[in-house]
Image (cartoon, rainbow, N blue to C red; front, side):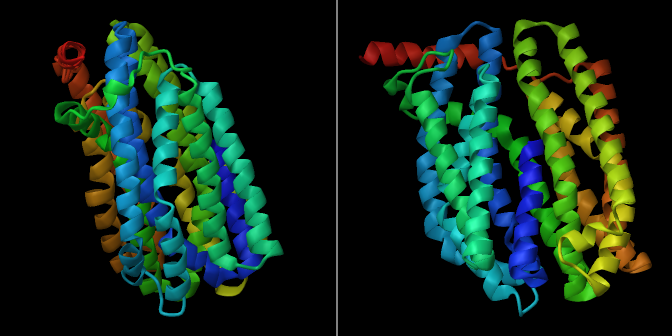
Length: 438
């Protein structure tokens, strides 16, 4: 995930030098569509993968296979449906903080990403299952191949062939095609630890419902990123014009590596927590959770220091000058303290999700993007102007960290644990019915 963040930074550099600040702003406006598609893949993949991790802890490989089969049944129809809806969805960029001069470029980027929607969904879903099935290194290698392909294609389609934002979009889709093929190939060779048969592809509404409920917080992580981009773009445009939108695009590119690293740490502790939860190893589960929190604190501290130190020369790397550079420097200074707290919401949500305490996990994720962040973004600028836009992230993270600690306290005191009773019963009952029908 850290390398994915580094790629995003490099992508911004290519677009900034190859197409200019307006193209940066246009991609930033349309990027929520890619976040949505990746979020759907995360929701389906993590909802299935957490269940698989739990089944592994309970030594139930066949039950895990049944959930995996229902995941495969969901993936392709969803991707096709979104691709067909892409022309309609791309029209929404006009309402997402895009000024009239960048709407055509943003729409083109969103349309290309939408046509290839199936591929990020398939990639994210299957990679999530690999992580929870003791295949962390194959999953990482797969993603590295995709990142390398994306960088090479970005150079070719943005710098060598000056296609601008459209070239960046085609590079992203092509890289996702490569990773999805590699992920499918991994499972096609039967390298997973759980059992799988073609008859497990038969859909069951209760299994799909459990997958969606368990994975709902994962969708929220990506929706948070998407909604954050939309709200920031709208408010930046209102209080600072197109220069502020371009400045936020640079801030977003610079902070994305630590944001994705924090997500990676949360995703990294999740398979272990779900496995130890299934195996009843509470002490090991708590130890992994503490390691996760210490790691995001260290990563956030380094990122905050880097943002403060580099606030004056980072804009020049993106070929930004004038008011864009000034806005970017101020924004980085006010955003830096929030990076210290950013990871805690993610690790606590991952902990609750892996424990299948879906209500607490969803409250942390959706409370952030649907309540606290919008309130901060719309109230603070009233009193602080554009500086209020930059300070909104810090206000949000202070409140959400306090809420996470409060939920954890109640979980420890009151045993707010939604045990997945009925998982084995449901899965085994379906398996026996399948066996009898054959």
